[in-house]
Image (cartoon, rainbow, N blue to C red):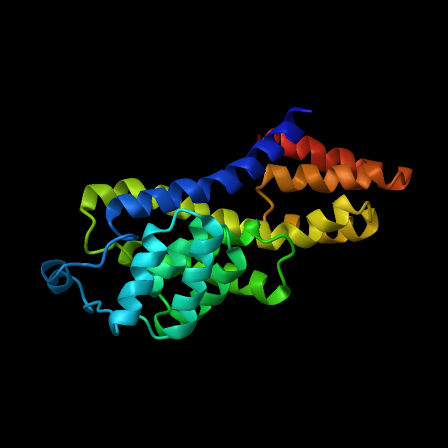
Length: 251
């Protein structure tokens, strides 16, 4: 029972952690939403951000000031469609996240990362929003996993220019947790799906492959042991007992 509770707590943590990460980035100034930078602020950032024309300026303000979520989304979609090369795609991404539009986050995030593969905002938003998708496609899973891996591999070089060393030191652990959690979620999804469907033969095969890759992970060992027990094949009970005992030993 304790092991099962621990697994559920970890899943809840992986869902809540992205919210803390995005809030932390906003505090660092990396997700500046709601204002168009002044000339002084633009001079301090590279490259400079500018609205294309009065039309984009008006849409920016409409999105920022609108309080009705449906109308806000309507303005946001118009902004994205009419200005596909906007300098404010990071801000658009943040608005889509706020409005709980994970598919739009994936779509716009892919466009941003195609031009800037190490864009911190896009890497973080894509990693954070994957689990919000009700039925992620294989392409979305692959894209989010790649984004999370890029985020994890480049944390030391992704510090925003607006962040101090101390701020970045505080933010990095949450970003690392987010990236690892997303990678874990993608890797284990086939096994979890098979388990949820009570297709225990497929679940055993999937969890076995994961355990072989991550032999020091107690949660994975416990899941493997549990699905083997669920198969009700007495000849496999010794393996189930071994994996569960190993999971308890790992802790």
